[in-house]
Length: 465
Ligand code: 5GP
Ligand code: SF4
Ligand code: MG
Image (cartoon, rainbow, N blue to C red; front, side, top):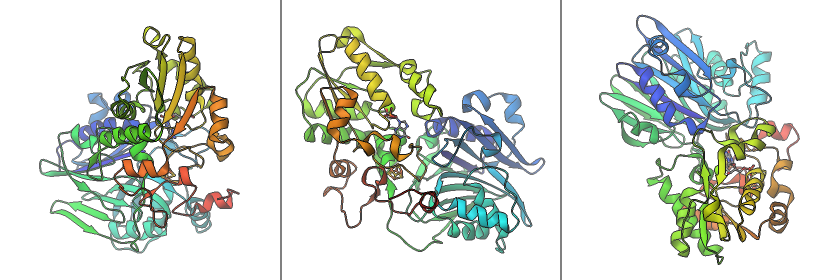
């Protein structure tokens, strides 16, 4: 998901809509905005679909006036079953004795089921199926004297990954879980302040990037500025390494470096580790593009656009049903036949999950007359599900969970298939010595199976680590 919040501007909703539009890659299922205006009070709007289709008309925007607000773009994650209802669309809102508050959450709460059970037993009335709603109910039960105190208390009971933005009538609040699994950044726009999942959402509104919110940090922003504190027990940070590989936008900054640069490095590492003689390096667009450029630069094999993407389709992976996902690849990608014919092609993609994308693409490329197809993947084999906010399927559906690399190559029917090593990936993201297995600098559970936070709901559900 993507989250965004702004305070101290004249029309918050337009800033939020723009910010969410820049974060659309983080979730395309639905979006919502909550604002506050002294005259109308809290205003809320939630819609299925893209920001540009829902939050652009002057009529709509006039219904969510105010100088402070937050927004959310939704991406359904591991826990969600079946179709999303509009009541699952964030931000969530609650009335407390000291006034209203809204929250928007990116990540996934790993003890949400047990929290929910406990809260329902004690009288909470849940409105949605979302793990994030627990936070509002925990806040309602807190004895804290103000909303930030209540939020702090609530978040101390929550396990897993959370980058949260929240608001009251007068305050914008941001918080990252102690491991800092999901990103969250602070920006300045005129006299106002912005919180956003990624820096690309600051760029679009002309805000300056101030800094990242730190793992375990909570900021409370009002008219007099930003107050920061660290309410959780300190822990070594474990940022999601897959944000670098795929999830974040290449024009965002993470950890002081552009994501694009990191992805190009990943491509270079991949070429060093897994060279092959070929005529062309082609990305699977768009997610494989920067890594393919890196691979080409390192290997000296020319880069070419062997696959053309139709820009009017979304990310295939995000379409919820298997059937649409299967079609999706063809709807979105087509082979540039004239270029491919008779060539030995290296295809670079960011990841292999179910293998649907790679299989279809291989078929299309061979149909077009390629002489050889070599897959090079910019992440290690995805052998474990993510429980921290990225929608990977159950373990059985992950190709790498049931097959060796050799078997995957045969299954995909390509001449060769190689993945970057975990160490290579760590080097590419700036850890010169690779992965320190005694305390890895990142979360890499989907590749290593080492979960930095025990996924207790899933374990209860029968998941075996
Ligand atoms: P597959 O087709 O193997 O199931 O999925 C791999 C493709 O899905 C890659 O091209 C990758 O860019 C894309 N993808 C989109 N969203 C995700 C995600 O959340 N996780 C992973 N691992 N891949 C994703
Ligand atoms: Fe990121 Fe993978 Fe960890 Fe999920 S399991 S937070 S995708 S590194
Ligand atoms: Mg892709």
